[in-house]
Length: 172
Image (cartoon, rainbow, N blue to C red; front, top):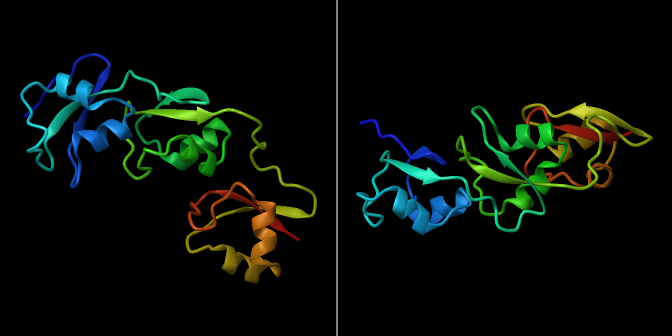
C-alpha cells in the first residue's frame, strides 16, 4: 500500500517498540502533529511495518547551533564528519535521537563552536583511522602507549563507540 504524505513530512515504517511518542522524539516533532498527519491511524494499535507520515518541519526546540535535514545514506558519523563536529557533540546535541534509526527528512541539531580541523593532530601524535575491531586498549598495545594517553589526545571521542573510518590522534 502506498500513501502520500503531506508536504513537510516523510514516510516512516513503524519499527518494533515504536510509539507516537518515541517517533515524535526521534523526529523533533510532537505526538499531536503525528496524529494530525495520520487521521485514520490508531496510535494505540501500531503494527510493525505500518507506514505513517511524520511531520519534520519543526526544528529541534533547544538547538544551540544550526538544523540539518538527514539525507539518504547519512549516518551520525558521516554527518558529524561532514559538519566538522565530533560524534559525541552531535549525539549530545540530539539526545532524543536513536543514532541507529535515522530517517530521511529527520531534523538534527548541529552544534556550533570551534571544531578541530579534520585529520589535524596535536604535536607528538599521529593521525590514525579506526578499523574494524579497534579499541583504545588494542591501539595502546599496537602503538606502545596507554589508554589514558589516547583518551587525553582525543577528549571528544567516546572510547566505547568507535566507528570504522573515525580519525584518532595516537600519542607517539
